Image (tube, rainbow, N blue to C red; front, side, top):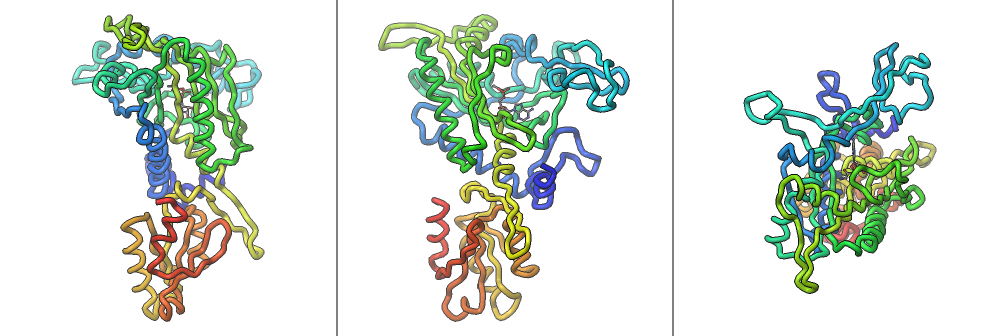
Length: 430
Ligand code: GAP
């Protein structure tokens, strides 16, 4: 993990928030490469969950919502974690993360307070008055924005059940014990999809989405042996869930969940119906029935999935007596697709290289580099996950061909400059 955190900073994937002020606990900023990777991950999800599916619509709801939403959803009452404090050093911990009665910080035994339930929602005030009437929450999940828009989307899109609503957006949780880099943070992004189904068909759709999501995660190139599905026990189930599976990854700090598939029954729509007094029902014309749909939810964290991808891609290899560090990300997800190098900074090579760079950049995210030895330039791109490095050398000036080095196999192909776009498109699928 330490090596990965340091690579992420060195290469511009992830920086600590407000670093010049000493950092802000558990908030991270994405640098030039991190933001590209994040966009690629979200674009892939949107393509596979919305664009290519006729049964799913997109949505982008506000982060701030009417405070009654969180009363109805059960979050005001039940979105809590057990908090304990060490009476010796006054550090606070999530009780279920501490084993035994010894303080993980100062080591003193038997000095914990009795657990009290701590609500994880961030509060703020709307408008110029800071009193209870103006208090609103930063959403702790994007899901509720979908539920309260159920009728709006249904009526405007004219979808029929079963159908889904998907959105990607920020969520906030005042976690007691954040940590493990971007794994557990207080501000993060979720990719959630709520699938509305007829009661009685929920088990079938729950099984369908559990398999679909696992297949999708595998399609990102994550090693199969590092992935598993785990069903929640009764005690682990969230307050809204009837049944739930986690997709877990084996991190250096153990098996941990990064996406959940939940059968939320009619819990949310029924609760909003009751509190708002508005009917959130569906009329099935074929069977002439009116009912409150059940919901199957797929809920993943963008940041957590990025940590999975980065951890899974991190490799150290011995090459000709030297250690090579690389991020073997799937080429389609890599932030930069190709780096372009003139072998030397003379003999007209930089001019040819810049021209190739200008041409390719119209279609692919590319990077030009003429500084340092060719070996150092390769090493920098290996750490940045760049799948292809294109070198302009003496032969280029004679026959208009370049070498293309493959990040993973280290094999070099000789390719005509006019065919480079096609060469990359064949390998990147774009
Ligand atoms: N709407 C359901 C829901 O929010 P969840 O299991 O609490 O379910 C879903 O969260 C996903 O959001 C998790 O699988 C994880 O990837 C991400 N997530 C939750 N809390 C997080 C945190 N503090 N930091 C980063 N990601 C988090």
